[in-house]
Image (cartoon, rainbow, N blue to C red):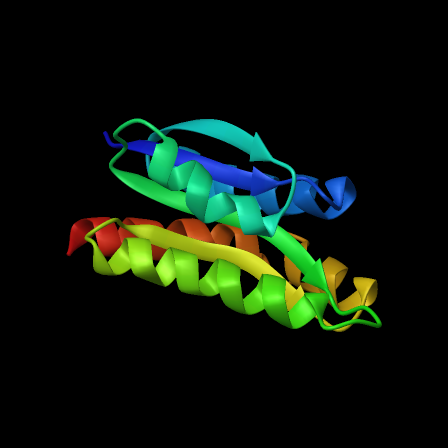
Length: 131
């Protein structure tokens, strides 16, 4: 049994709840223990992982919805780059940060009964852990 850290951005709490439910279902079914660390937004996720204690794998969950400014691009690209940087250092990270045009897209992707991107992020982390 592996120790998994789920780092979730709760900026959109109702969407975060669905992502977390999907991730937990996958980890529980696979018999892995997990701990949840909450951060304000997607930009804080890579730093939280870098500052966390040792875990076997990491699942990242969050939502970035396009707005009227360039902020969407910054948050989307910088958070993904941060996770990739950590992954290239050898960490097993499943990226479940949604980057969407609107809330309807986020709800579709986050819902465990439809897109289940939280569950998919957990599966990705477990796949990388197995490498």
